[in-house]
Image (cartoon, rainbow, N blue to C red; front, side, top):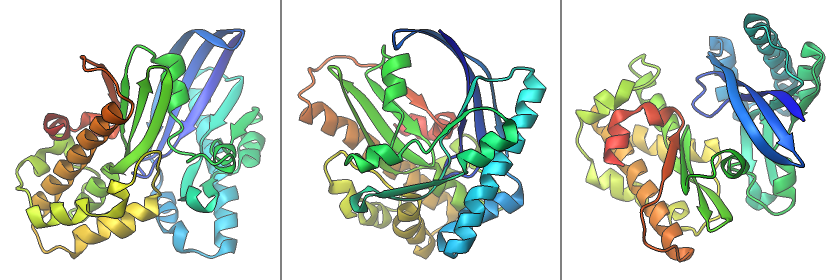
Length: 303
């Protein structure tokens, strides 16, 4: 069986909607072949970026309205994309935009109503990816390991440097996944103060110096000492990391530099934890690095 599927994703960095038109050839549930045919990132309008950033503090009525309207907005963006590339998918698979995520209390919430999206595009739509996993006592995040297993089996580790950094691992056929900590969500918010969308290639961070007191303060947070599996919400990053950076009297380059060092430190620590806990033999292993942070040369150098 052959499928054309359009995947949609928007992350905590709020840089826009990622669209990926993929073709899959399958036989008895096994992916024989796949190809990423077309991809794009459509920036959110200023109004939508602001709405999404402020939604966790809004009323239930505003939340419900935004959930539905965002679904229609996604549908409009999809219609523009498929008109431009001239390919109509068999299905749309939409992750939605995470607003709340608290698996310890059995709930997770991604907006972007699948019904509104399907109605706008007239294409069957798969949505609400995380809810079933949380209902079955899972973390609901990250959801990438199934992709790692089916499409990138030649790698041992998978590091996604998105708004939140997360790690997946193929531990001798057992797939492990968990969130490491904040990443681009912090870096982008810091440089937004000087009217930049992001620190291109980590150039500003590279000129800074480590604030050791801030670095040590952040690493003492309880989350960084919890065993995996574990996951984070965007709001946790705001309340525990971003807020701490803004409360620290320090020049911007030093804050960016410290954030990069802290992310790299926790990433290396997380990989080491997996190697030790899963008793993985010492040998060279392959890691696939993805996400916006993969374009940050300074972060990759530190890693």
